[in-house]
Length: 155
Image 1 (cartoon, rainbow, N blue to C red):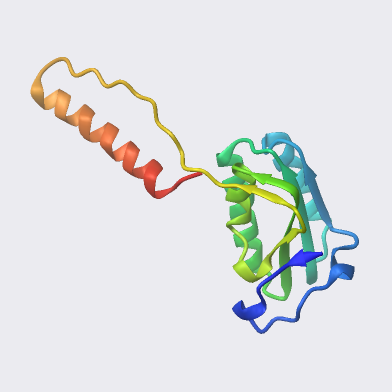
Image 2: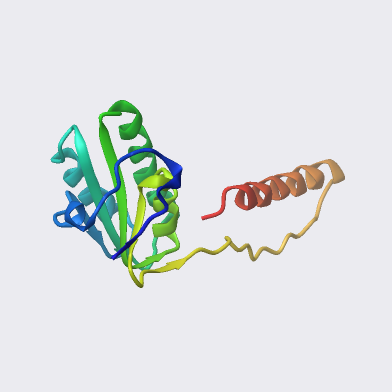
């Protein structure tokens, strides 16, 4: 039922019974409402042992996905006695894949048949250069820097 590559760690394997009642269940668009549900459900989860975070999404706001992901990273460091595992179900698109990337590889699971959509960010920008050359160069450098940032930190 679950796909996993155990060669990444010596942690015990997880079986289907471990996924029976996930502590955090999220479905729908990745947005601030999902972030609120995520925070509420995480707060009620145990502070030790296995915590399964189940997600099914067609995407959403990549910045919210990063917020949720940073919470996972922080909690994993703060509570090493707790194992936080991602379970993707049905569809993990775009921002959902961004969120999944914050989990250690050995803590990422997908149900059979789950579809992943990972894509590069796109930019559609017309740059008009008018004015003194020094001002224009600063504007061009700023736009180039933004493009580099998007390229190195894709959604």
